Image 1: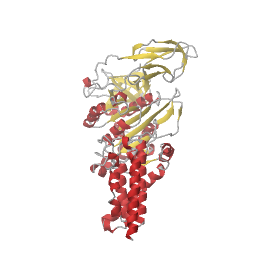
Image 2: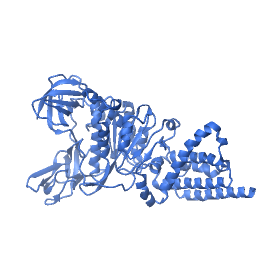
Image 3: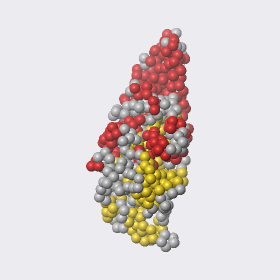
Image 4: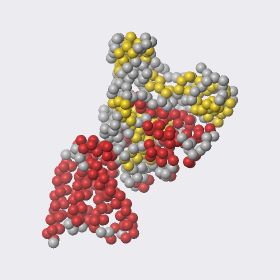
Length: 582
């Protein structure tokens, strides 16, 4: 181990002199309590490091000990259903709000192991050697960089995460063993066989997202929004209802009271798949704003490393990062203490590259073991005063494919999700159209475009209506406003507190979108034939369509076909009345 002595310290940043060799991103232990840290710069005989604990009491002359390895976290069984800090240390209820620097490590847990190989078998990196049984059985995979022929395998029993369970003989004759868990550097992406192209969406269960702004499985999405627009609530809804196998939720620099609500509510949520607790397939990484700022910067990398670990098991993972703005603020604070030249709004010049490195680790891949796995990143952004032109939001736009902009006015009107349909976009929509065609909606792309054009026209006409009055508009334009209101109520609004409409399957989304678009067509034809917009607005079916999400749940999807026939009949009667009046 190498050693240095502190020369200067300011907050979480220190400088130390040494005559020995350190390397960038090397993990270090600082002071009498061995506070964890990481080397971030080398300047001749001086190292610059950031500390992931409160540095109160450290002084010049205190020792800095290098570990010789990069900052890493242990990956193995025991992650699911637990809450960790930014360095993947367990935050048990008995630990309180902080982990003490001198805290006694918890007793080693034991896990069951069932071998699935025998002596003489050949194993490569990423291949299965056994299983850890449980409510969610996890495979025991050969860690990256290890391969060979099995020379010994442990019997079915319980072991600690660090006890060897299999020994391989490499091609050169050297032995190599591995246990249930292994460490991995958080800043190094885990390897895979190859990256796979877009094949389908990650279903969120939210109509406005899946129908208008879908995110591909293994894609990247951002949720920017000012204070009070519902970012955390939306991410909680996505965590519960999206069709991912594993949820990794990282609270990065959020206020303690908000994070406390998440930590209290998320473990209580019921998993709609199994009826058990959602927490059983969730990992929470909590790093609140009153925790050390440098650990906030590391927590994002810890979370994506955990997500990649489950991806390598052939699972589909959704990573919820709340919020990347606080992570960027941590970068800015550390950069300022280093005396680096600031960029826009004081953020470091490398902000854009750091964001790109993080989002690049999302993807749908073929794992080393040959399975398909994915990591979908959904990052919340908290622009000051809701200004989407600020640096974090603008640089995030360049990295993501789906942009779900939250609107303060919609949020204040209790419209959920408060996603603004004209500020949001999805660059993957056209590539996902074939998937929706397979689901039974060959016109999905056309219908989606029709809805967006209608909402765009609504904004223009509402400006005119404020000047001349709604009644002064021509009938066709009055109908546009009427139909846009219907689209907002029937398709875009979806209450997360509704037992019936809090989740909407692709099949129900297709049925709702198709019948609403058919209403638009019939209404336009009726007005063109001389029917007044007031008559269209008075149709009983229109009122039913406004509440279609509440009245036609997952069990009543076939009933939408009967509603379709009723709608056709009402419009036909309306047209006949107009013709008879002539």
